Length: 359
Image (cartoon, rainbow, N blue to C red; front, side, top):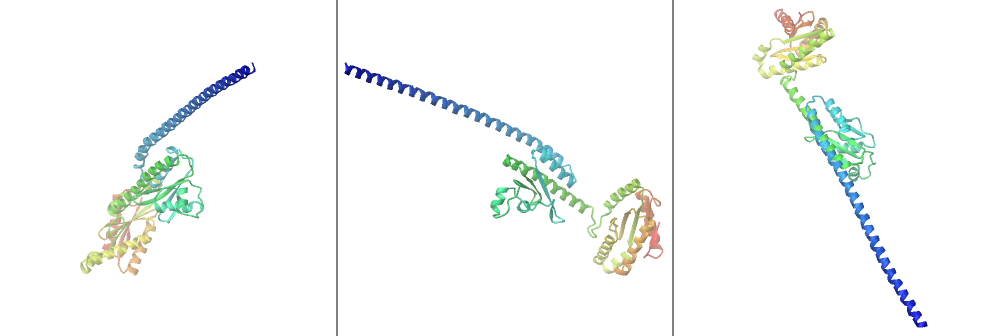
């Protein structure tokens, strides 16, 4: 009987272990299934987030790509450096949605940045200007060991055709690589516009300049004189016109040759610029030169012209004759003013040269 109970107890115990094993196995399967379901759910959520972020990134890129042609079309119409700079800085906020930025423009005449970067950022900004490549703070610190850490996260040069016109810097770290690409593109477009403007001004300057004397030429004189005359009418102020002629120039040319004559013309042009710093000076043609003096009456213009004549006679050993006319008493348009000044010059030459005559 005792053996029977022992066997029965052992059988029940084995049965219990069997059921326990089956229960644990089922629990493990259930737990593994739940873990797999949770992993799948998380993968699904991550995929949704990735798709959402990708869609957002694509929409942002599309918005930027649509905005850039509009920016370029406005950029190429501007003929002022200040207007180009203002458009660039407005666009940084609107297109790239940058909360903080600073643009440092290089002033070639003063040989410095405007505004000057903070001492902490000075080396960083100037390194980007000098090297002409965009840099993050980390890239800059890696290149310049021991330099104090700047508080700017990224600096991009405004560079075109091998010349840097400035540097734009931001402090943001969010989507820095994406901002870097579009900021570089925007900076290159802007620098190209500034470079084109400088080239246009240089061509315009050459087109308006007399190649021998480096004074303004006859075409520019007529255009500018008319503009200055209209301005004088609006402001109800005097405007004087002076015409000078180098005495016996043709005889000097025939005697000493054209190179010597050219030197006389260049010397007179230099003296003319030195004496009339606030007016328009131009070569009218041949040995004739003109000066327009806004806000100067006839008597004041006569004294200035007489001072120039004396200087040429005493210092340069060359005599000149001149005629003076003044708005409004001697004429109210370009042709009339020129005729009156030219008539006065004719009288000066007829009366013996080396003198100034008023209309």
